[in-house]
Image 1: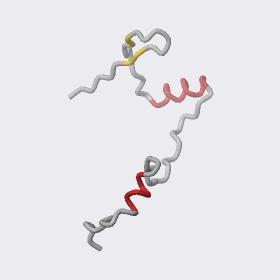
Image 2 (image 1 turned 120 degrees about the vertical axis):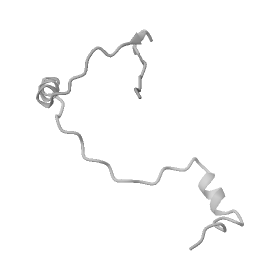
Image 3 (image 1 turned 90 degrees about the vertical axis):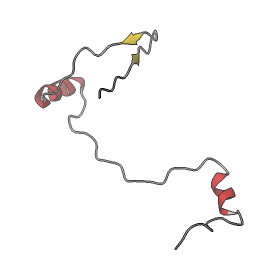
Image 4 (image 1 turned 90 degrees about the horizontal axis):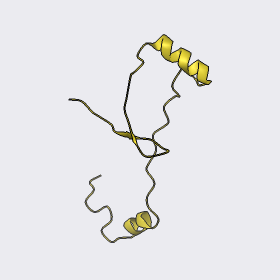
Length: 72
């Protein structure tokens, strides 16, 4: 199965097409170095709890049956 992303030009909104991919690490490193970008990816971020929309968490915590379905 192929995944196709359709990209849009940020200036005019026209459709962009992928012409080529660079897969050789040495070539990728040369391009990134020329652009002044690091060749190594950043370290992964620590996992965190997603933020609740304002008022949702407080309302859930104050319901009479909050957590009643959970088994300890």
